Length: 460
Image (cartoon, rainbow, N blue to C red; front, side, top):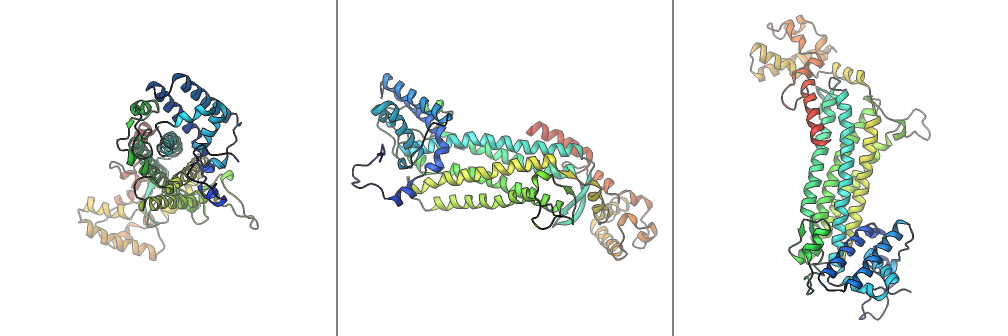
């Protein structure tokens, strides 16, 4: 059996099979392979510059690390769970290539600062991937918006038809949500962007290391200032998971609407076949499985956020092995949200909207009731609460006669107020109702067109 490079000589017996199973994280942190090699390479450069190791030994170490990286890319590397994690695997691989000199690489660092450095580098790199995928979803939503500034659909509150809005305006709401998620990712990375390398196990090191050099070469803004905090907290991972979780929740809300809209009761959309499934026994079914699974994944990411908060809440300073689970939770959250973003972007690029059905839903409702009340305020100068009462009576009457507001006659309307004139029918049209909402951020087509230009400039 291979021996671990870090085998403690105080331990007279090898780890049991059960300890090996629970202690090993190589199946998870293998994803830190490139980050571990890069951080090790930079650490070695610093050891050479500060004369902690010789130039000759340092070059051998760097060359060995580069060979390992090439082997990884060619899929020639076989990892061994006996070495617990990716860090010890890299060290063992380096030892097999250059011999005992490999042991000098770990001078002036600990696995505690090594792992958190690798982890931060991974999050920095993959936060950009998430940002790019959110941007693609925004682009798909903006594309729909540009074609549908005058497409009328019901706007809802409490899942009840409330007022007419445009499909464009509705889509832009998600563009703004996703834009804030991108901003949160950026803020998260700003706080994360401090290098823990050189913090050691918890107390720093007596070697004359240059932490500013390693921070700069690894792309961090500066080194961390407290060695205990550097190795013991994972607030950066919590924040990253939180941003991903909130993104997942926004995806779930969009998915939920797509699921509702694709049902026979709504019939607002036609789903792309390639993101739907059929039933095993009901040939008429077209199930929105893609959207449903995005909605389901939100549960997983919320659980991961709760798990990492619970993991941290009882840990004394500084490092405890409990922190090994941070990467599993982060990677799982990242995978779920990344997939969700890709599914929803493809879905929004291929979805078809039933515009006539959406308009009909507005026309058959009382969605222009507020416009009627506003007309009474503007034209007849009634207090809004009085106008609201009159409108309520008109709606109640229309409902009893199974009529829409726009289909009522002037004579019928005047039963409730003799001052109502033919001019009122202009505001009872769904399109005119929508056009009248021209306040900043409103749903009027001209206002929405300006919003589209704004979001294109801001997000694309």
